[in-house]
Length: 181
Image 1 (cartoon, one colour):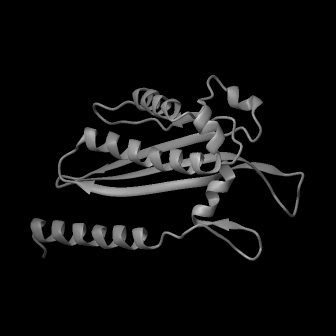
Image 2 (cartoon, rainbow, N blue to C red):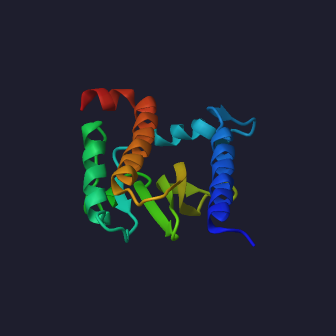
Image 3 (cartoon, rainbow, N blue to C red):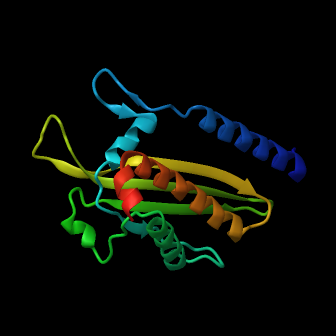
């Protein structure tokens, strides 16, 4: 039978290996021979966006609400020169783009793990049936981590840092818009 400290070390070691493997699998900007974008090449799907609506999945974390996080992230986007679409304004924009943020927590007695996903979702059209369009993530970042004590400040920083990756990708393919604002 494993002791709690041995179990905790095993769980954290397993998590570390998973995080390391996920981090080492990132690809550079690429386009396949078939014209399909993968890796950082997906940032081209951000080209000519007129703005994004921010959608934050509801949160159940003491000291961090979905509404507060949404307001902070909208301010970060606006400061970077990216137009924030409000009140379903995106429905009047090509592709109906929205930035989806989901932060999930799993609590145990010994530690807390989190998962963060930030994705740009917009309509895409099936090549085999051009009359069919669906919403799909065309750009995405994902992070997972663990902490022994719940640190809301660290979670906020992580979300802001990963939103920074979206901002960098957006500005890389929309340099004029970012410079004007």
